[in-house]
Image 1 (cartoon, helix red, strand yellow):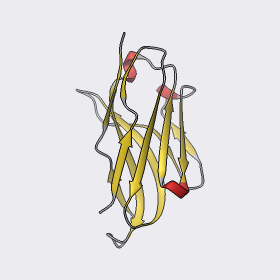
Image 2 (spheres, rainbow, N blue to C red; image 1 turned 90 degrees about the horizontal axis):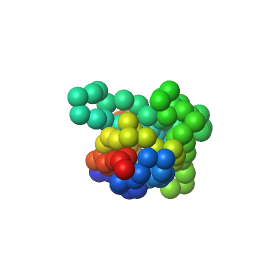
Image 3 (cartoon, rainbow, N blue to C red; image 1 turned 90 degrees about the vertical axis):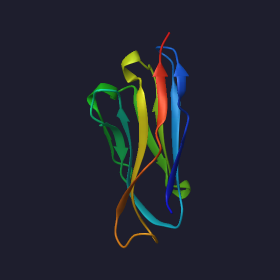
Length: 121
């Protein structure tokens, strides 16, 4: 089955940086859009950033200028460089990919397990 394996989360001080990675594995034919979402208690899951197979990016207003999303198509991997982190960035960050694989007839969405990012002094 397709799996999205995330890494890079952790505890960081305000103003610090983290780099999240998410690698898709399995018999994958193609990946359309990959992105990062985040969720905090009491709030709905929100899109942080996503990127198309052609490299077109989209960011939430709250992270523009601070976060950068990128991907390595050869490695089926998406990254999120997070700079100038603020306490309000604290959340569980989840990787998402819409892709075609041997396991489904058409395009299907997959989610990673989520990784905790905590910004605190």
